[in-house]
Image 1 (spheres, helix red, strand yellow):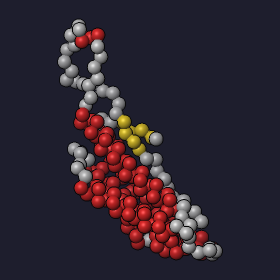
Image 2: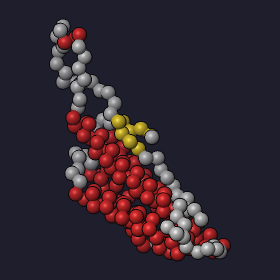
Image 3: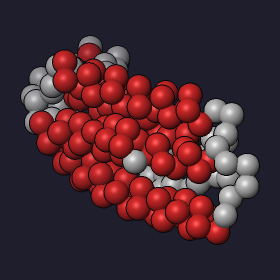
Image 4: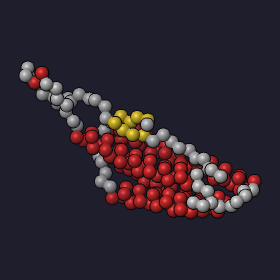
Length: 179
């Protein structure tokens, strides 16, 4: 039995080109060569965003594996998904924040808390059903109801992540693209 869940689009960032407002005058000899000026703060913002995004992707991979589980691997996959959520939360707690990143970081922490709590507290009953050889109509209905509930809660958490990520990107002049 496979449960389906809402898999939102994971966003990556990449820097766009901007002109440096503080650029100095170019002499005639300099006009023959081109120079790329890298905004280190902007690059750091991109790296920060990408690190959070990669953590999110790792969690989504674990959830996808869990929801594709069968009776032979559901317990191990559940344990791995909970571990991923917990270790990501620990990383976020000690991670150095970036300027104007508090809301984005808090949304990511909330997302990983959702996964940790939901999987620790509620998925155990689903695991029991997934271990059965023959599913009854009640089992199928329970799986469907859980899938719907999980997807709705996950979508709410992701919406907050996307909103705060967009604000972070705008403040740091980075462009987010779908991958």
